Each structure stands twice: as structure tokens, then as C-alpha cells.
Image (cartoon, rainbow, N blue to C red; front, side, top):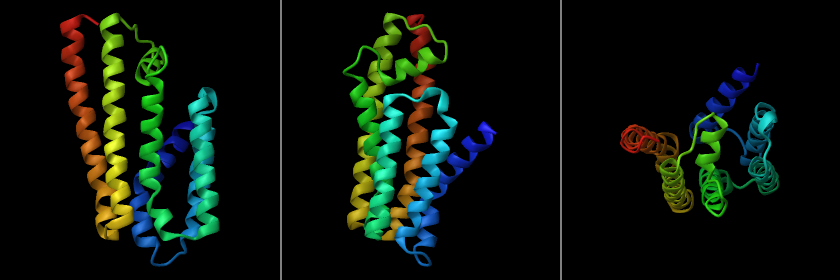
Length: 185
């Protein structure tokens, strides 16, 4: 059941820009608040074993966003969701840099990885890179939501942003293999 819920949440998240692009012509923006409430409920259900402060804050922000969307019925607010998500996740990455363990180090430890000093440096650096990438993504999403055409917003939010973040992940993964071999980490 958990795997099915994760698959549904992932599919809903990835499909969001297309759902909005085609759905906004037929539905009021306020109706989409139900989409976010359902998505937050699914994420809360699948992450019941790892409810940490950042998850609770993220889900609370999604619920507040959903309420604001329901009350305002604003198309512009509806288009701001990808920027909202990117900025929230970037903030989580950057905030973790003030702690002893960065977000990526914490994730690696949770998956049973041993963190050497070289790996600790690398995970901190990588956390900053992902924070910056998400900040840039949020900025582009914000610009397109406020000043771009809906088609450009949908193309960026539903394809281009996924492609360049996937390319960043693939490049980082290849570099990580090299780095870990070089530093025996």
C-alpha cells in the first residue's frame, strides 16, 4: 500500500503543471486546493515513520497554501506552486547547513552509509549545490508564474525543470562515484 501511495504522490506531483494547464480552462483555481490537500495527506501517510520537523513544516505550508488558494480562487497563486515548493525545499537544504549534519548527510546516514570526513565535506557541498539549484528553479518558476505565458510556465514547470534537475542529479551521481573512489569514502 505504501509503494502505491508513493507512486500516486509522485505521479500527481509530476503531472501537476499539465493538470493545471489543461484544467484551468474548465475548473476554478480554488478547486485545485483539493489536489494539494490530497497530496499533503498522501505524503503524510507515506512518511509516518520519518515525521521530522522539516516534514511537518512543509506539510503545514502546503495546507496553508491550499487554504489561501481556496479562499482567493487566484489563478496566479495556483501557478506559484512550483516556485513555492522549490523555495521551501531550498530553504530546508540551506537551513540544514547550519546544523552539524546537512540534509544529504542525514539522508545518507539514514540509508546506512558511513560518513568519512571526506564524505562529510562532500555532502555539505552537495547540499549547498542542491539548495542553489532549487533556488534558481524557484526563481525561474516565480518569473514565469508572474510574467510569463501560461504555455511557457507549463513547459518549464512540467518538462524543462524536471529535465535539468534530473541532469544535475545524473551528473552529481557520476561525479560522486569518482569522488568516493578517489577519496576512499
